[in-house]
Amino acid sequence: MAEKKSLIDLMAQRQQDGELVPLTATFELTQACNLRCYHCYLENCQGSRDEMTTEQWRYCIDQTVDLGAYFAAFTGGEILLRHDFLEIARYAFKRGVFFGFQTNGTRIDAPMADAIQDLHPTFVEISIYGASGQVHDSITQVPGSFEKSMAAIRLLRERNIKVGVKTSVMPANRDQVQKIRKMVSDLGALYTADPIIMPGIHGSQQTLAYRMNDDEYREYMISEGWGSTPGKEVEDLVKDLDRPDHRVLCTAAKKRFAISAVGEVIPCVIWRHSCGNLLQDGLEPLWHGEEMSRLRRIKFRDLAQCIACDTYSSCLRCAGLAEMETGDYMGCPSESRRMSRILKEIRKKNE
Image (tube, rainbow, N blue to C red):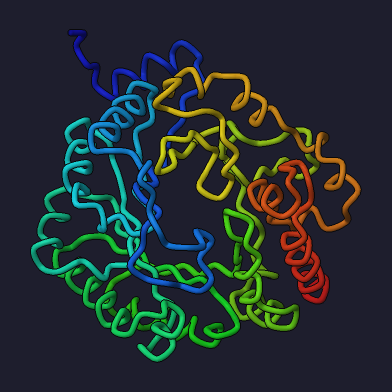
């Protein structure tokens, strides 16, 4: 049996050879969830009989390490619904992968927090939708979920585990953002808020009812300082020199990829454009294969609607959202266009 090389040796050798090495992988362990958040893009919160087994996830981790990626994010659904979650995470730890977890936290008690501490994750991200159970539970549609998620944050912080809290911002909770930020900051947790609500991955449009309207978006952006903060530039590796501002917002298929719960290799969990199945084709052939290569070759000049748009410099374009909305990842997602238009208006007023 061939000796397994260390992650550091593999990365050094591949970079020396000039290969395109992905830095990050996202592992979607399951689509099952014990909450029923009405804005969730996974739609039905149900797992599938076709979801990968423990051994198949071990194989996936081996393939990922062999490809050269050094960081993984475990996500779902709710990852702790898998009885083998700790076994999978321990195997990743054994292979030298740095990783973080995305969870709703409701299944984290003291013994689970101890087990997570032993894995030394770089972070644990927990979703909180309100500063009270009344608001949060109305969105998750599960009574008591707020108290369980907040208890998880406290348990993890007591063990000095880095915790990030994330909020999907909607009309029902947009007035909660500052309150949540203060509440979790007092516990030593980091905080991010995201106002983008995605369509369902199977085509449902029901989640779109929970998007903010223009006035609500404008108020939210101003309160968060969006119009006064310039966009962050990404590393030279993924800059698009074709584009006037040289800015590429998405590194999917360039520096990162995702593996779905059934083994599909996709650019990310939002951009679910299948490039093949890991179990059938192997990861490395798919990463260097024609489909993934075609996605990473897309330049600004190829996006005809972006070239003709007067708001591109403020645009948070998402290829996954474009494919969800239009069926074409080269298209213009109306939600991105709407946000960029409002942001441009704000910046113009600030001039």
